[in-house]
Image 1 (cartoon, rainbow, N blue to C red):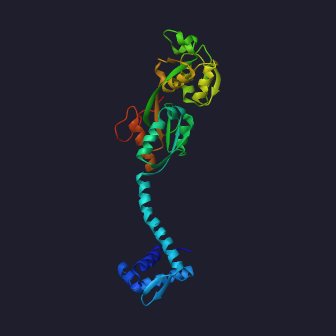
Image 2: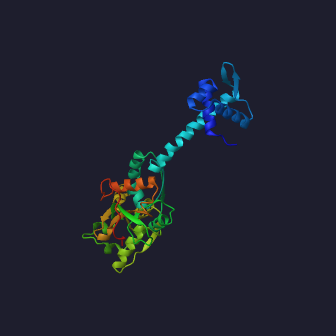
Length: 312
């Protein structure tokens, strides 16, 4: 059974004006047409809705119940264009985001907080993944937006600058490297490392740096998070590499020592990746613009600018 909104609207008008004639006059329609609509409603619902008298009409109990439901339904119908416009404008919506642990622990909490304050009706669904999986998720449209560390891209996606961070070495207190003057990363390769899980951007960067020095990394243990890595370093199972901001946080907790890595590879770019900025849903486009506006090289409130060359 399908209710005709016009019939419901005319039924409510009859109740509000007390007679079919006055309702017809208010709605600019023939009284016979109003009466026919009400009769069709009664036939459709198989119940009497109005009692007709010489003084006008009054609703039956069924008519009173229908009046309340009809008003509610018509209000909701009127809200549809308003709500849909919010979605089309991006003021309401849903954004699927995949990000690596470095961006989640350093930048995204505050950036998503400020985005949520500006757009309270946009829901951000955030999932942690390693960089290769993030790039693949964006390329395959599993995610609207990816946040990852610069790397060689094997997928055709658009990339925008977001943030930068610096990697640092963490060692247990009293470790020989902590007292070494003129530290170079090659000095660290004489020791066991605690690494992050397979696919980690930091693992790949550190391994590539060792390859360029014609050395290898001896991964003693691999873990799934920064906190677990610090627990292992604190237990003197090895040394590790973390983003400097994260290293400072954990060094205070565990009493670890931080050693700056001076080599250029330790400076990383954090990127935003999308399949196509122009074809993003409005809410996702607003999210990308917001992140880009907060980045180290933010172009004010302009649209994000693609990175000209694929990062190597």
